[in-house]
Image (tube, rainbow, N blue to C red; front, side):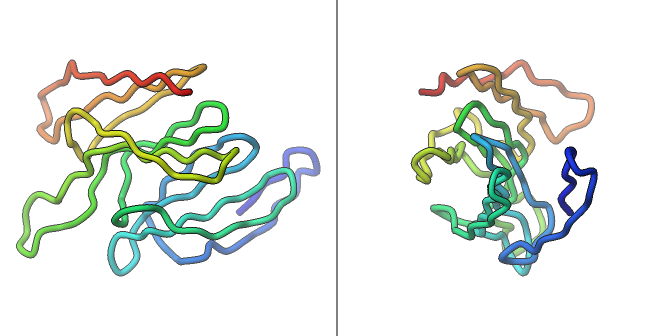
Length: 152
Protein backbone atom coordinates (compact mmCIF):
# COMPACT_ATOMS: atom_id res chain seq x y z
CA UNK A 1 0.00 0.00 0.00
CA UNK A 2 1.29 3.46 -0.94
CA UNK A 3 0.04 6.63 0.73
CA UNK A 4 0.57 9.97 -1.02
CA UNK A 5 0.81 12.65 1.67
CA UNK A 6 0.09 15.43 -0.86
CA UNK A 7 -3.12 13.99 -2.33
CA UNK A 8 -4.00 11.97 0.80
CA UNK A 9 -4.84 9.01 -1.43
CA UNK A 10 -3.90 5.35 -1.17
CA UNK A 11 -2.81 3.16 -4.08
CA UNK A 12 -1.51 -0.40 -4.17
CA UNK A 13 1.31 -2.17 -5.95
CA UNK A 14 2.73 -5.69 -6.06
CA UNK A 15 6.27 -6.75 -5.32
CA UNK A 16 8.05 -8.89 -7.91
CA UNK A 17 8.02 -11.91 -5.57
CA UNK A 18 5.57 -12.46 -2.70
CA UNK A 19 7.44 -12.69 0.61
CA UNK A 20 7.15 -11.99 4.31
CA UNK A 21 9.57 -10.50 6.85
CA UNK A 22 10.96 -8.15 4.21
CA UNK A 23 13.36 -5.31 5.06
CA UNK A 24 13.11 -1.81 3.58
CA UNK A 25 15.13 1.40 3.66
CA UNK A 26 14.66 4.75 1.89
CA UNK A 27 17.64 6.27 0.07
CA UNK A 28 18.00 9.00 -2.54
CA UNK A 29 14.28 9.34 -3.28
CA UNK A 30 13.80 5.57 -3.58
CA UNK A 31 12.72 2.81 -1.24
CA UNK A 32 14.63 -0.45 -1.43
CA UNK A 33 12.78 -3.62 -0.33
CA UNK A 34 15.22 -6.51 0.12
CA UNK A 35 15.18 -10.14 1.16
CA UNK A 36 12.54 -11.80 3.26
CA UNK A 37 11.04 -15.27 3.23
CA UNK A 38 8.89 -17.22 0.81
CA UNK A 39 9.66 -20.92 0.30
CA UNK A 40 13.15 -20.10 1.58
CA UNK A 41 15.18 -16.95 2.05
CA UNK A 42 14.63 -14.55 -0.83
CA UNK A 43 17.26 -12.79 -2.97
CA UNK A 44 14.58 -10.53 -4.44
CA UNK A 45 14.96 -6.74 -4.40
CA UNK A 46 12.22 -4.30 -5.38
CA UNK A 47 13.04 -0.61 -5.77
CA UNK A 48 10.31 2.01 -5.70
CA UNK A 49 11.10 5.45 -7.14
CA UNK A 50 8.97 7.90 -5.16
CA UNK A 51 9.50 10.65 -7.76
CA UNK A 52 8.21 8.68 -10.75
CA UNK A 53 6.10 5.99 -9.08
CA UNK A 54 8.02 3.33 -11.05
CA UNK A 55 9.19 -0.03 -9.71
CA UNK A 56 12.36 -1.92 -10.63
CA UNK A 57 12.93 -5.58 -9.78
CA UNK A 58 16.40 -6.94 -9.12
CA UNK A 59 18.25 -9.54 -7.09
CA UNK A 60 20.90 -9.12 -4.43
CA UNK A 61 24.37 -10.62 -4.47
CA UNK A 62 25.04 -13.74 -2.43
CA UNK A 63 22.49 -15.87 -0.64
CA UNK A 64 18.93 -14.88 0.20
CA UNK A 65 18.51 -13.06 3.49
CA UNK A 66 16.21 -12.46 6.38
CA UNK A 67 17.82 -9.19 7.50
CA UNK A 68 17.40 -7.81 11.01
CA UNK A 69 18.36 -4.16 10.38
CA UNK A 70 17.87 -1.73 7.50
CA UNK A 71 19.08 1.89 7.63
CA UNK A 72 19.94 4.59 5.14
CA UNK A 73 22.16 7.60 4.75
CA UNK A 74 22.09 9.81 1.66
CA UNK A 75 22.16 7.55 -1.41
CA UNK A 76 23.12 4.43 0.54
CA UNK A 77 20.79 1.77 1.96
CA UNK A 78 22.41 -0.68 4.39
CA UNK A 79 20.98 -4.10 5.27
CA UNK A 80 22.64 -5.97 8.12
CA UNK A 81 22.62 -9.07 10.26
CA UNK A 82 19.94 -11.69 10.23
CA UNK A 83 19.85 -15.25 9.00
CA UNK A 84 20.79 -16.75 5.63
CA UNK A 85 19.91 -20.39 6.26
CA UNK A 86 18.42 -22.80 8.74
CA UNK A 87 20.23 -26.05 9.51
CA UNK A 88 18.66 -29.36 8.48
CA UNK A 89 17.79 -30.08 12.10
CA UNK A 90 16.07 -27.59 14.40
CA UNK A 91 18.42 -25.25 16.13
CA UNK A 92 20.34 -22.10 15.52
CA UNK A 93 20.26 -20.60 12.05
CA UNK A 94 23.26 -19.61 9.96
CA UNK A 95 23.83 -15.95 10.81
CA UNK A 96 24.75 -13.38 8.19
CA UNK A 97 28.18 -11.92 8.88
CA UNK A 98 27.98 -8.77 6.80
CA UNK A 99 26.30 -5.56 5.81
CA UNK A 100 24.98 -5.31 2.27
CA UNK A 101 25.10 -1.77 0.88
CA UNK A 102 23.00 -0.58 -2.05
CA UNK A 103 24.14 2.64 -3.76
CA UNK A 104 21.09 4.29 -5.32
CA UNK A 105 23.26 6.57 -7.49
CA UNK A 106 25.12 3.72 -9.20
CA UNK A 107 22.59 0.90 -8.79
CA UNK A 108 25.36 -1.31 -7.40
CA UNK A 109 25.57 -3.60 -4.39
CA UNK A 110 28.59 -3.91 -2.14
CA UNK A 111 29.22 -5.48 1.23
CA UNK A 112 31.41 -5.14 4.27
CA UNK A 113 31.91 -7.63 7.10
CA UNK A 114 30.49 -7.32 10.58
CA UNK A 115 32.92 -8.17 13.36
CA UNK A 116 30.30 -10.37 15.03
CA UNK A 117 27.73 -12.53 13.25
CA UNK A 118 24.38 -12.14 14.96
CA UNK A 119 20.77 -12.58 13.88
CA UNK A 120 19.53 -9.60 15.88
CA UNK A 121 21.26 -6.39 14.90
CA UNK A 122 19.86 -2.91 15.53
CA UNK A 123 21.06 -0.09 13.28
CA UNK A 124 20.92 3.68 13.05
CA UNK A 125 22.43 6.17 10.61
CA UNK A 126 23.00 9.92 10.60
CA UNK A 127 25.01 11.99 8.17
CA UNK A 128 27.75 9.77 6.77
CA UNK A 129 27.82 7.42 9.76
CA UNK A 130 26.06 4.13 10.43
CA UNK A 131 26.17 2.23 13.71
CA UNK A 132 25.07 -1.33 14.41
CA UNK A 133 24.55 -2.91 17.83
CA UNK A 134 24.08 -6.61 18.59
CA UNK A 135 21.22 -7.90 20.64
CA UNK A 136 21.95 -11.31 22.15
CA UNK A 137 19.29 -14.02 21.89
CA UNK A 138 19.41 -14.56 25.64
CA UNK A 139 16.88 -12.42 27.46
CA UNK A 140 18.48 -10.76 30.43
CA UNK A 141 21.86 -10.36 28.78
CA UNK A 142 22.98 -7.15 27.23
CA UNK A 143 25.58 -6.10 24.73
CA UNK A 144 28.13 -3.34 24.70
CA UNK A 145 29.27 -4.12 21.16
CA UNK A 146 28.64 -1.36 18.61
CA UNK A 147 30.23 -1.22 15.16
CA UNK A 148 30.74 2.13 13.49
CA UNK A 149 30.95 2.66 9.72
CA UNK A 150 31.84 5.82 7.82
CA UNK A 151 30.05 6.00 4.46
CA UNK A 152 31.70 7.47 1.39
